[in-house]
Image (cartoon, helix red, strand yellow):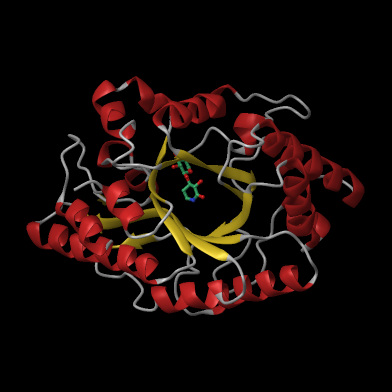
Length: 315
Ligand code: XIL
């Protein structure tokens, strides 16, 4: 069975994956990536981020992003744009700050408007805001919040909406997949944006999980978000383990993938699931979480792991 085929049969819009431009020369990899029975949606892992798209003020480069969009188009796959405003992977001209409120407002409007506008009509959705909160539910201290307070969210969403009225506009974060101060902060933000008429269509649950530690209230949290009149999506799923892998860990990982897919499947407003690349070969996990890895459904030789069967069963 094929992951996107079963997702669509279950009434979801897509099962998708992140990919990165440097990976596209690996023809064994692209043979799987390009198969829209496996993947009905692509996310660019890096090439639409601020440092890649506006490295100098007012100088836009879309080469990398364009390559992913062209690939998705030729494969008949949807696109999620990722991302417009994030504290990380910023060019120094932004992260150095020193702006007045008016200056940074214009910078955000120009960045989001130009980026989203460049891909007008090509994107199913955009992560307009990425990772705005700390784990305790307070706002992250970054150039955006420190200069503009919470208004940067509205500024970015309105600029994105003007640039592409048809794209679903998301706020995306991690550690909002279970009850706690961060999920509460995100729900409060969505409610207040909705109450003020700010365009917000979705909440992205990243879902960078650990084997054996998938939140048991994931479905409940999804239902709480969709009750606020937004859709949800699993945007960056991977489930890592402390290496080396064992048969028991790989079996637990299969169960864990199934649990996440089943949660999305059970919630009408959960539109789809994206894994944060499909092979352990290109996963971001080992370089970020020391001693951990093997988080993807395909191993580093592009062979499917038990986790893949968990995905199929979950839909
Ligand atoms: C990661 C990419 O996969 C890596 O290649 C890069 O070095 C760092 O960023 N949350 C996000 C993604 O929203 O943009 C991150 O992607 C993973 C965590």
